Image (cartoon, rainbow, N blue to C red; front, side, top):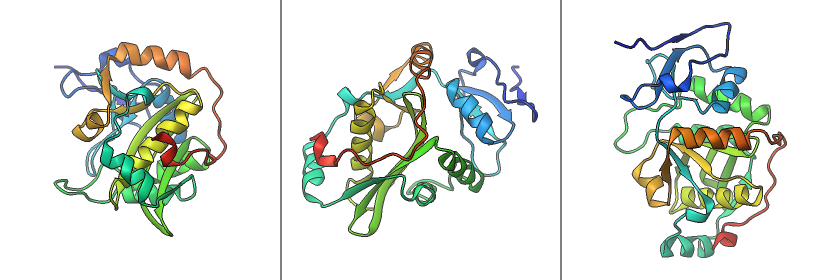
Length: 237
């Protein structure tokens, strides 16, 4: 039986991603920590952490991989109507930690959360260093939706989203799609497929193809400045 490697505490190296298990899909290693250096090393190799409270820290590189190309996003008639008429407005990077906290909130048919306190602190540190970004959706002065993820070179690795009003998380995602396409990003990495993402146009690509994107787009310089608002959700209609 294959033994899941235990990461060394004094190194940010990972096993070859080809060693990842087929079942559960993509499980590669365990242990280590969530330091900024280890997280950045992981994302650059197509690896991400995912574990529940009480579990060891687990690292994944699934095959296939879910991605969302800007040209393939599906915007329904009702979503277009929301984008035009609900009066939401969008900001970037104004309350990152709050967005992450909302994403960590319990959801229907879900016990607990994988966005543990440790994860929240780690990604907030990445935000403080300029690597992690958030999109916020507001209804007047109330935060009603948003998402966050990691941006390296010209790739955006999506982490999670939340919604407390009709279509708010979808509008955050559409706005992000416009933003990344404007800046030359090929897609948003969605990591693993789920019905919600697939309904919006996400598709699966092989790990090999995903690695080719990493080689091509991570060579660009990373913009570590806070994102500026350049689009409105209606601009994607």
